Length: 278
Ligand code: PAF
Image 1 (cartoon, rainbow, N blue to C red):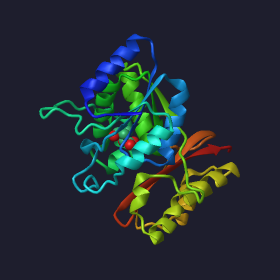
Image 2: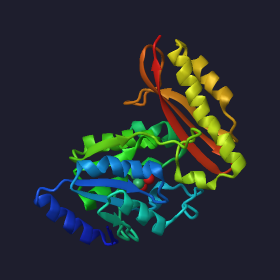
Image 3: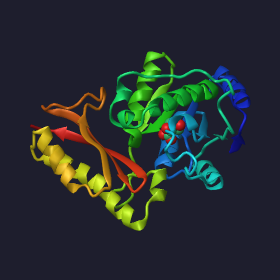
């Protein structure tokens, strides 16, 4: 595995490989990699000839009071994990933006709810960096985790609307054995906060089980989930359409439950598919 830092060198090689007919696969990350990230590499690896992973803690997607400065980093451990999971090039740019960078990619609608409503500007930062990374890496396919389910929906919409020609693949959310969704931010949690963080997945599972047993009232289901939560502040607990992210108002069909909550200063998110039978 090679480590490249220069966007122009990576772009030149990607262009050559695409011209030779190679399929370029891409897994963008912000590093501090865990089994959720490596599962995305495992999804991409058999689908491409040349696999690029990026590690770039993108300042554009952090709010002024968020954790940009203390975002966890482990470049050496990350490189070992990428190499063990078949990555050909680990792209670790010092910066991705020219000093006079002045373009923002904004996806309307989808990014105004859930995390977008709570983190103003966050998704503009995500779509702008992903568009920039796609410009450099020129991937045929890119894999994003369903842990950030809204991010995946927003990126799919950007790729469709701007005809970017990238196949976007969602990778299933990966959990610890006790149910906690894997996240680089779990590293911030004290043992007590980590124990209480399990209440996020517990709430979602309780809602899924009740819906599976025939519960049909969205309000009652949300109350059931909320009763399970043991967090310091709840950003949202919501039921939405998995494709449009429109609020779920009732009736049978696939729905997604979303939760975001804080334990101390740490913000965690989780989501789960809910199948309404009634
Ligand atoms: O999901 C992430 O790690 C980031 O939002 C991404 C997609 C790498 C963009 O910075």
